[in-house]
Length: 164
Image (cartoon, rainbow, N blue to C red; front, top):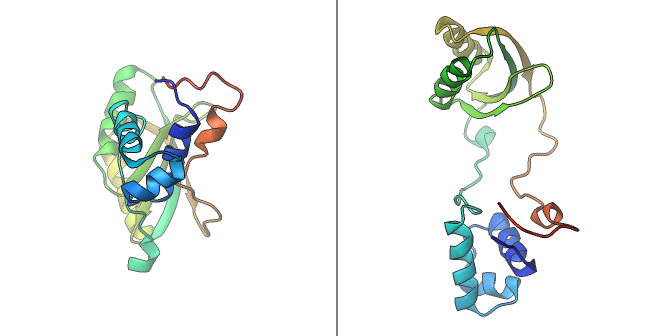
């Protein structure tokens, strides 16, 4: 799907406000409401827009521990990666998991009620014998920046602006 400046304005607007009205979105995109809504639906059908979410401040609900965890697996067979990934996707406290290159296999973001709960979660992972060779824990002491809005216009700057 080829994206143009209007598509990028639509993406930027709905990222910033998923509850934006059709009329307000059309104004931001520089279109009338019906063509704007049709473009929005096209972006959704193409899988470029994957959902709409509320951003929740967990510490306003209860004290929580935010933890980043590096994980290296002992073996690197496809089955080992699949077993690990299946397990972490089923644990709600693991709110993000990235497979990475550069010395570790995964980086996880975990939100737990406290450090003891985090350690129980890790102990549970180790008890499942997922092939974890080593892990490192990083306690988040302060969030400096955590964006949910992606700079979509910079993705295509100077390019053909074709989305795959």
